[in-house]
Image 1 (spheres, rainbow, N blue to C red):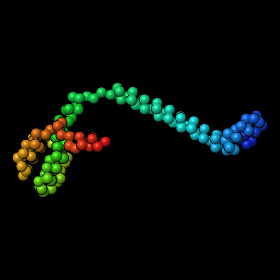
Image 2: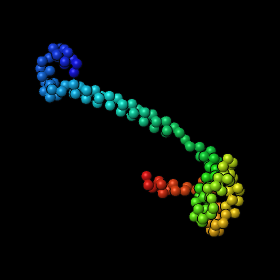
Image 3: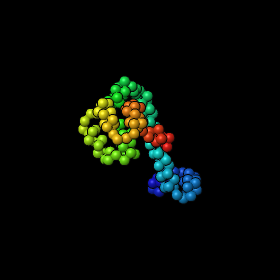
Image 4: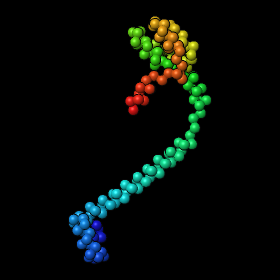
Length: 149
């Protein structure tokens, strides 16, 4: 547009007339729009390159299933959530506080958690269900949440 305004004779008369007719006298807008579109293409291309690089990198990642299982097997505190839910269902006092006292700042193993469950004043069927859970078998509401996506 600057060339059209400052040095119109450098462009041929036929070109100038056709350009003004095509842009309905708004040459600046036409040139600005083409610059914006060109720059959008650059951003899109860089994004595409980045996505492909990420996918290439992720294809090289492997899960160490043994390490994952070992870490999960040592995370018995995960089961505090279903225990707290059952305690609330049966109206036990301060389920959160009781479990916080058991789990906060210390490693919890299977024996400690099972000892806690055995002392609860809940039906035997619920105790058996809680005692049968392991960190690997408990998924909470994940299945229902996954369906909602």
